Amino acid sequence: KISSAFYHQRVHDHYENPRNVGVLDKNDPNVGTGLVGAPACGDVMRLQIKVDDSGKIIDAKFKTFGCGSAIASSSYASELIKGLGLDEAKNIKNTFIAKELCLPPVKLHCSMLAEDAIKSAIEDYKRKRKLNIK
Ligand code: FES
Ligand code: FES
Image (cartoon, rainbow, N blue to C red; front, side, top):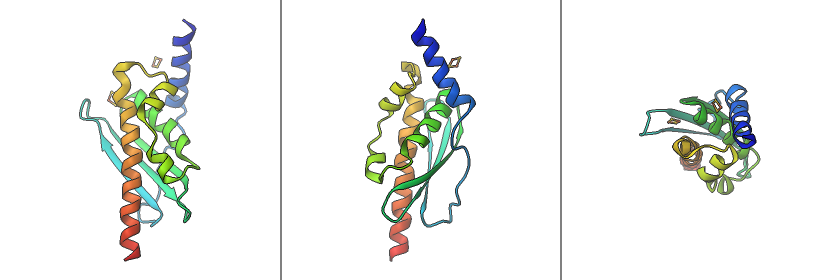
């Protein structure tokens, strides 16, 4: 039962000590905000990224109204994307997050929320940037 103990430990660490909980200023032109919901359970995740002029994510904050696995997924994802370029971040798959946190199959959709939130935050950032360039 070592593997299941390990699963609990890792999920609980991100659940009990979630990294990067909070808000970034959504009026900052370098901040993109993603807000997504899981139809399966109604849980909601907000992820914000701050991007520098070279297109690198330099900060990330989240707020998740959802289950422990969703909170752990967003905490893990927020750590993962810091320092990445937008294209790299966009390619993060929920299955990777789920595997890293050893989420069981019934909790796969919780990690999907994190993947969707990353994509949504990137889209918002790009949309804002286009508006600013015009
Ligand atoms: Fe272990 Fe919640 S009791 S993940
Ligand atoms: Fe729905 Fe976890 S149970 S996000």
